[in-house]
Length: 376
Image (cartoon, rainbow, N blue to C red; front, top):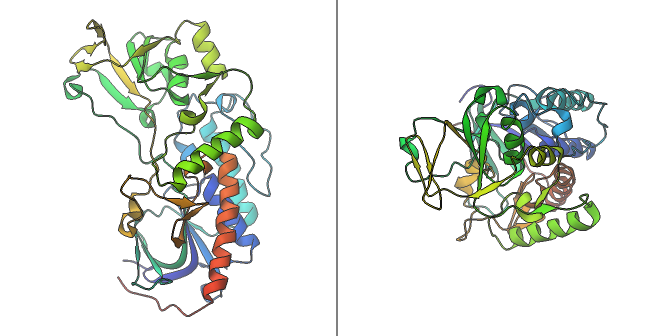
């Protein structure tokens, strides 16, 4: 499978977004060295990133999402954010910060490398993990998965969807409001992205906002010590029970962001119950009336992108993955960060540190042993 076949690292990190970079920083701080430059060292690590350059999912955000429109982005460990122009596209500003972080700490990142699967090398309780990629195979003692959600969008199937003659797109394909000038556009979804799309598109088009449930808006400022702590407790309870989790907004409600206030003031923040079916030229409303449309924007969110972990059989009968902190319950070799309660940027930073602390304890417990390269 190429020149990387059979290479090994004590820890393989998958993903170089906020969570993956945090894990890489803490591995370096704990004394791990590059598996690329010093493969014979006792404790090594490597980061595998599917993107062609730094920035994680931020590289793919729509052009009109500027720094001023972001929820708070917390500093990466060890390097404060520089001052950012509030009018600069976030897809330029945030990746530039990530690139500076990678360079500052000389992190061993290989890209673009897409992980295809992770499997057990054998049936041993403390056996190795085999990480197969489009650039070769890595053997690891511990896996820290930080792949986020961007590559696993939720695309609901709806009656009549295939008959629609207009345009349908997901948040992942959204470019800018200019594409919808003069049109009649449905925005489907009750999260932050839906409100951002609604505010933007309503400047140049007639918009219709659909959600399954009545959106709940939070009055006042978000308080990390009260609302934040309560939210983490709720999400943690779900992941510890092995229940699938939704977006953080599903636990907190929507804040009155600048986008929400602008959409409200423009008269666009008017929610409709979900339509019953899609027809060639529009949608059939819940009350039986017909609304003609030119486009439907599915701002229906994302799910954790962990499909490459399917060979490990981590999911339970509920469809979730039971966790104990960052560690998969009963599987000390596998950590998921940027997952469940660590989806937020501050949570991702903390999760990176916790995953490394647990990985070090595990490696201390099992001791070091020679791992022979495999060929595949």
